[in-house]
Image (cartoon, rainbow, N blue to C red; front, side, top):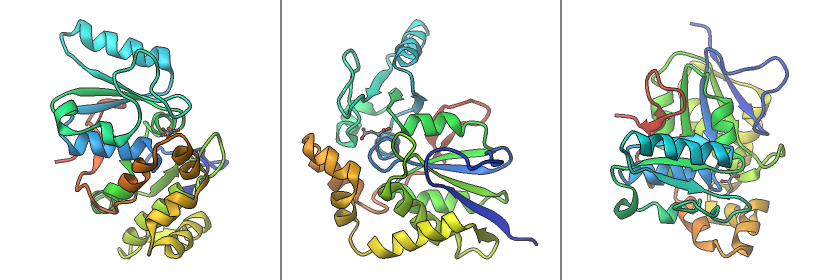
Length: 247
Ligand code: MLT
């Protein structure tokens, strides 16, 4: 059997000529959107509905309320909770006591945009260090090309996303069917460099230092816990952009 392409998008956007059609896409935004998705689903949220536009996020909440639900609306602008939202984008806010059984609409600056960009994939996953192993195991069950989409920040690569993509690639490359492109090899090498100390990585990278400066140092500790949550976060069958914990 011919090897399956394993590609990495380093900046949250496709290289010329590539798209997610027919591929399994894995969106990575370690700080903090996909860590928050994993925390919410790992703590029993019913689903996560990603939105990038704040007005669309409020509209999604109103629509669910019209249907009799009591959803939560979370996310950030500039790192902080948006006025009128129930929660910010700190994964520490998404404990079972707050999210169990709830639908969550999540609206962030870069991570949810990457999820929206990749919604047309044959399968879609949201991954970070906390659920990298569960994600890789779920992805490897399929037989299609894989795209690791690093959300990055405003069109620039983020070191922590690239390293996490490298960790997922390392797991996938143990399965003989994948063939890495150069961006994936770069991600793998970044991961190898930081693998022994993910906490140091998150303290070193630009966005980690930015978040620490805003007072979110504890989020870095949470997001550095490799495989702390055994949950693969994937798009619900037949539903665009409704992300659930895979059975
Ligand atoms: C994003 O989507 O840009 C991030 O998750 C921002 C953040 O740190 O909250």
